[in-house]
Amino acid sequence: WQVYDVGFFGDDDCLQEVQGRPHSSGRCETCVCNSSMGVWGDCGVDLAFDGSVPLSSARGTAWISQCGVVGQCLPGQAWLGIQVGSFAVVRCVKLWQHGFAEHAADEVALEGWGAEAAAWTTVAEWSSVPGGKWTHLVVPRLCSDAMECLEHGTAQGLP
Image 1 (spheres, one colour):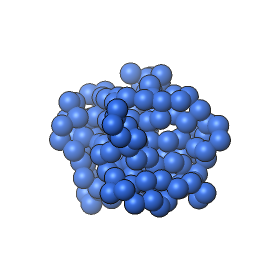
Image 2 (cartoon, rainbow, N blue to C red):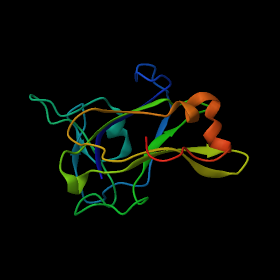
Image 3 (cartoon, helix red, strand yellow):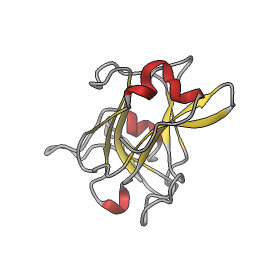
């Protein structure tokens, strides 16, 4: 999976960004990527949060997962997100993933850490997620109001 940029937002319009420390399942150990500062180095998760996307005049930067070099990753094999200091409501995910199907995820899920259950819980899921452009994934209202889904089940079906 290759992601040029991702952001988590507290509003349905993806304008109020939720700040946090980037984390991922891993990165391609053999890949070399160019940062937004023009420095070559690893393809770590920070590149998915630097605001640099491929436009007509620039290539953009990308996080490349540990399984995203040859073929598609298996479901649940690659993930990225942020760690926040306290409870945060996420109502929108803004994503720009690679445009080629073999380097993109067709299905994406938003998960949250449930302190009571001490486990990750699915908050929302999306299918047919396009690549090669900005995609706004709006969290269904049932799940985003007071994060009801976080402790009491998951969203019903794919929005």
